Image (cartoon, rainbow, N blue to C red):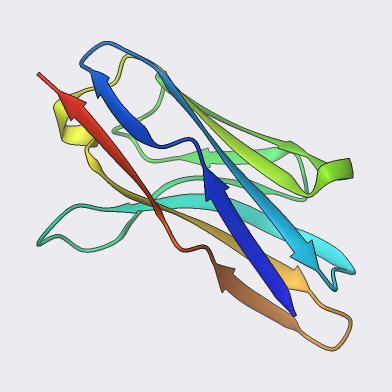
Amino acid sequence: QVQLVESGGGLVQAGGSLRLSCGASGTIRSIHVMGWYRQAPGERRELVATITNGRVTNYADSVKGRFTISIDNAKNTVYLQMNSLKPEDTAAYYCNADINNGLTLRSYWGQGTQVTVSS
C-alpha cells in the first residue's frame, strides 16, 4: 500500500510564503509524476504544479514565477515553495503521485492541507 502525507499548510498574510511537503511511503518501485492540485470551496480541483521523472516541471499560469515545485528522490518527497501568496491562492492543496507499486502504475492522492491567505 502507498500513502501520501502532506504538511506545511496554514494561515499567512498576502505577500507571505509557505512551503508544502508531501512524502510518499509504502511499496514504491518508481515515481513517475508528483504534483500539487488545489480546490477552493465551490470550485473544481485544479492543477498547480507537477514534476515528471524528477526534473520536468509544469505550472499553472496563475502561479508561474511565484511557486516552485521540487523533489527529493531519495526521500520520495515533493515540495511546493509558495511565495508572494495572494488571497486567491486560498484552497485545500492536494498532493498527487503516479507510482509504480510493483504491480501496476496507479495514481494516489493525499488527504489535503489547507492554505489560507488573508488580505
